[in-house]
Length: 598
Image 1 (cartoon, rainbow, N blue to C red):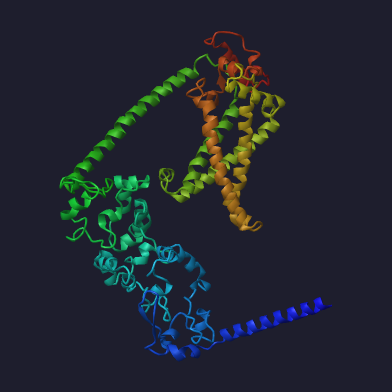
Image 2: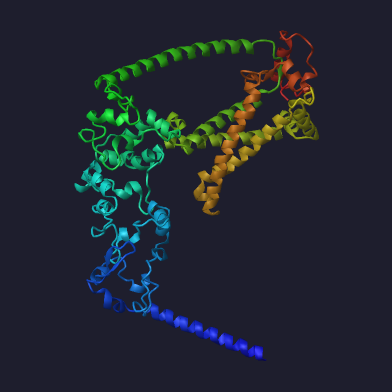
C-alpha cells in the first residue's frame, strides 16, 4: 500500500514538472520582441567577442522587418533565450541556422569554412558573416552582400588580395561593366560548399571550374569568345596529362592565373608575349623565347594557311598526310580486298570441304540474324553514347539512329518468328531443334572438356552434331531475343505500356535492355567469334555460314560423332565427288542424314 502511494506521488511530481516545463516553453515562445528591443534598440549597445573585438549589439528593427526573416520573432532564432535574459548573465548562444536550412548547413559543414570552424580555427566565416545577421536579404536583391555586384567585396573582407586581383581581372571588370554572366566568387568556388583549389588535381580546375563557362556554346556565342579553348586544351599535352592523373600538369590557372585573369593583350597578363618565358619557366626551367613561340590552343581542324608561319606549316602538313593516308592506305585496302576475294573464291571452289553442315534456309536465317544484330549493336550504343564515334559514324543524327535501331529490331523479331515456324513445320527444322536439345551427355562432355583443357587427360570429349558450346550459344540467342524483344518494345511503346504498368517498369526495361546488350555483344566477341574466326582450325573464317560446307578433317576433329560422317568415304581431300553429290542431294530436297545440313 505504501509503495502504491509512492508511485502516485512520483507520477504527480512528474506531471507537475512536465506542466511547468510546458508553461515555461510556452512563455519562452511567447516572449515578445519588445522585451528584446528594450535593450537592443540602443545604438550604443556593444560587447566584445572571444577575440577581443568590439561588436555592436544594436538591432535595426526597420531592417529586420525588411529582411527575409521578417515574420520570425527573436526567439524563433535565439531559441535558448528566456525572459530571464539578460539578468541571468548567460550570453546568447550562436544561432543554429540548420533548424530551418538543413541542406545548406550540411553543405557548409563540408566546405573549407565549415571544416575550419569544426577545427576551432578563429576568424572562420559563418553564416552570419556572409549573409548578415538581422538584415538577411536574398542574394537576388542588390541590398544583399551576396549580390553579384557586392560578392567580391564581401569575400574581400577576409580574402583582400584575392578580391583586389579579381577586381582588376577581365571577369571583375566585365561584371563591373554590367555583364551579369561574368563569374563571381561562388561561380568558381561554389556557394555553401566553398572549395579551396590549393593542391587540387589540374583536371578538376580545367574541367569543373573553367569549362563551365568556356565550354558553353551560349556564352561563347553571346560574347564572341573562342569556342575551342576547352577542347584544344584537353587535346594538348597538358590536358592529356591531367586527364590521365598527372598532379603537376599545367591547368588553365597555371598559365592564365586564378583571380587576376587578364587578356593576353594586357602587359600584366601571364600569357602576354613579354611574360611567357617567365610563365612557362615555372614548370619548364630554362625556357627561351623560341620555346614559348608555339601555341597551346592548337586546332588543326580550323587552322588556315594564312595564319602565322607555324600554323601555316601545320595546316599544310595535316593536309598532305590526310592525302597520304587516304591514298596509300586506301590503295592497300583495295589491293588486299581484291586478293582476299580471289583466295576466298578459290577456297570455295576447292574440293576440300565436301560435307554440307548448313542448308540454304539455315544460312539465310543466320545471315539476317547476324546483320540485324550488328545494326542493333551499333545503333543501340550510338543512342546510349551520343558523343561517341559510333554516333559520329551515323551522322550524329538521333532520328537515323533511332529508326535504324527499331527497323533492325523488327527484322530480328521477324527472323526469330520465322525460325520458330521453321523448327516446327519442316523436317530439317525439327531435326535441328532435336539436336540442339540438352542431354545428360552434355554434362559429361563439359567435365571431360574441363579435364582436357587443364591437362588432366589427353582426350577431348567426343561430340555429335552439336556440343555443349553450340547448344549454350543457341539457347542464349533464343533467350536474348526474347528479352531484348520484350524490353525493346516496352521502351518503344512506352505510352501504351504505361497505360497498364507504372512508369518505373519502362525504366527497368531500359536497364535490362542496356545490360543485356552488353552481355550479348561481349558473348559474341569472346565466344562466337573465337569458334568461327579466331580458332586456328577455321581462321580467318568458318565458311559454312556462306556455302554451308565444312571439311571432313574439321568435322572429325570437332564433331566425331556427327551422323554426317557416316556416309563420307575416306578419300583424299582433293576429291570433289562428295561435294558435288552433297550439293545435288540438297537441291533435290532429300531428307536424308547423309551429306545434308542436319
